[in-house]
Image (cartoon, rainbow, N blue to C red; front, top):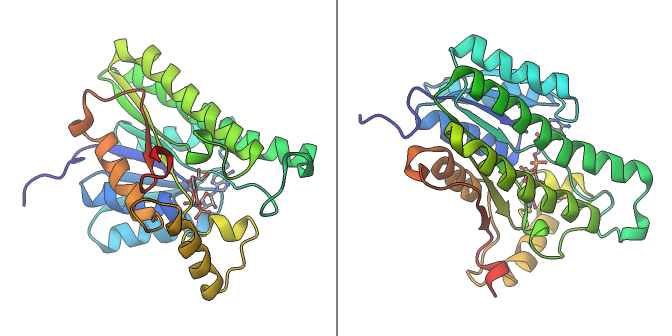
Amino acid sequence: MPPGLLTGRTAVVTGAGSGVGRASALRFAEEGARVLCADIDLPTAEETAALIRKAGGTAAAARCDVSREEDVAAALAAAADRFGRLDIVFNNAGVPTPRLGAALEDHTEDDFRRLVGINLGGVFHGCKHAVVRFKQQGGGGVVLNTGSVAGLVAWGGSVYGATKGAVHQLTRAVAIEGAPFGIRANTICPAGMPHTNFMTSGGLDARPESVERAAQRIAATHPLGRAITAEDCAEAAVYLVSDRAANVTGIALPVDGGYVAR
Ligand SMILES: NC(=O)c1ccc[n+]([C@@H]2O[C@H](COP(=O)([O-])OP(=O)(O)OC[C@H]3O[C@@H](n4cnc5c(N)ncnc54)[C@H](O)[C@@H]3O)[C@@H](O)[C@H]2O)c1
């Protein structure tokens, strides 16, 4: 078997208990990475790590609330201590607009603080501690963040979209500041993914027929004609964190079936 694209690398993935985080953790491990699966919901992160080990890979799990700087710093330290060094940090955890379809004026101060604290704060914490560690270690490193189509166009909620637009901008800054140190930073920007737990946690009816209707509605807005999956995002993630993307930094890559291009 030829070596994988990520053989010998250590990766931390946040939000690894579900959706994009789980699919990416599995793909990173398949490509040879040792993965620390971090999530606020520890049992689901443990499930992802168990799936990786069952497939012959190397993984551990940690409870981590990305809105808490000390949790994020501890997760990155745990990965480096356990696996020798840290090479990849995928800041993926995020939460949706509360109450499906909430307009700007429907957001409470608590809604605002939660969205900003997790979606932007979590990425800030992950970028900051990745950069600190990469500089201490030497030899560069890779940051990947999950933004959203909602940070590129007005879709998916006003405050949610604002946090994601900020993630895209923070990533560009990390890319430019990190470049002299061999640190790359990019964002993936998914369109609506009805099959992860994201939309149902935001209020979409979780019955399969209702999720399928949402998938069809979303697919109809995509030039390529189907809704995005966690696996679509995981493929983009593998590329961006691998050496195949060695000269790619500062981009916000839509994974959206052509949605923002139309
Ligand atoms: N699903 C979509 O429609 C969609 C579209 C565009 C972008 N995104 C983004 O993709 C990312 C992943 O979403 P998903 O669809 O896989 O959602 P998901 O709900 O399936 O998974 C999110 C994971 O993040 C975890 N999480 C939530 N709050 C956390 C916190 N404070 N600290 C650590 N972990 C936390 C959850 O426990 C869950 O395991 C998010 O950043 C989301 O904003 C999703």
